[in-house]
Length: 93
Image (cartoon, rainbow, N blue to C red):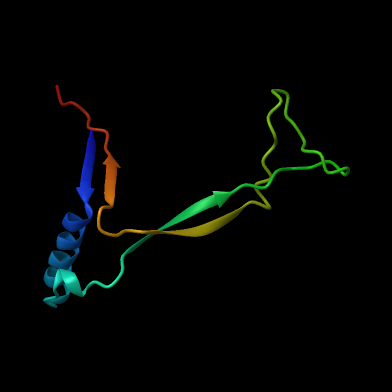
């Protein structure tokens, strides 16, 4: 199942959450900026001494998990943006 939320719906949900949890009544227009932060893995690959990538038996580059790192990325969530959720729903029989 795909759920699509428009930016205006997300902002309304945020203001409602702030009202319920913190008791603060804010205006949707008072939200100056909204961004989405995500963690993305930047993979490093194992290399031979000559700098060429090491390959496994299938010809794929070998990931060096020890030297791979997580990077924080930001995405502007402004007017016209949409947020999608893909949810698996199990059928009850």
